[in-house]
Length: 264
Image (cartoon, rainbow, N blue to C red; front, side):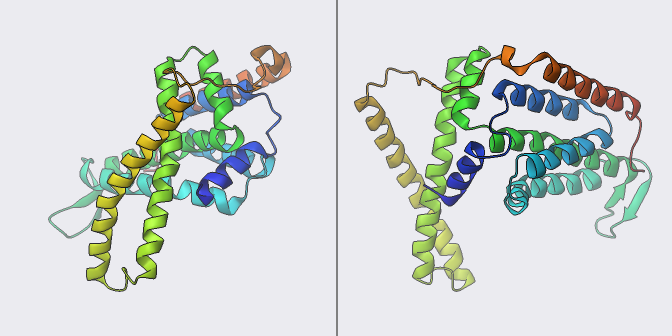
């Protein structure tokens, strides 16, 4: 089991919002994420990112260092998309001349790229809220109660598990190569990465077969049962539902009012 999996599951089972109704947290995250995705201005998604980040760090008591590492990958992805959108998808007045192949950052491209970056960070912060405050078994149980197709839930469960099997194999092989000076030079690094990629496919395939055989030996009949105490919608309480509705309405109104706002 990888350190990342242990830490992620550890936070999900022992965070400051652990005892809050699971349905309430799921509704909050999904509704807020949808508002972030439909916003036509970066103001509301960035506001959502700030609010959800504050909840994760100060209410759920998640380590800020771990959270920043957790958000580093989507931020890098969003930043790359922002750069490409700013350069290649804009038309109109140039904002910055790059001086290479007549490339330039345009006003439209910058605004579109920044909006995409804000949406990604706002939406992913909501996904981080789900992952860091709700154990995956409870989350899958809620999805099952919401009548999401069983095949989708089972695929998600298996994918979640296999991600960490994949990471474990990568770390094991990487550390083995590193101890044998496999990354002491650029030439050796390229060769080691090629060997790692080729062997990784074989090893993960074998791991998958072993897991499937283990599941069959335990009477696997094609469906994975989820057992957890997630509470019920009725246990959320009228006050909490009203607060959630007011919060989402305020965000929706903010989305409407800021629809025409942009950086430039």
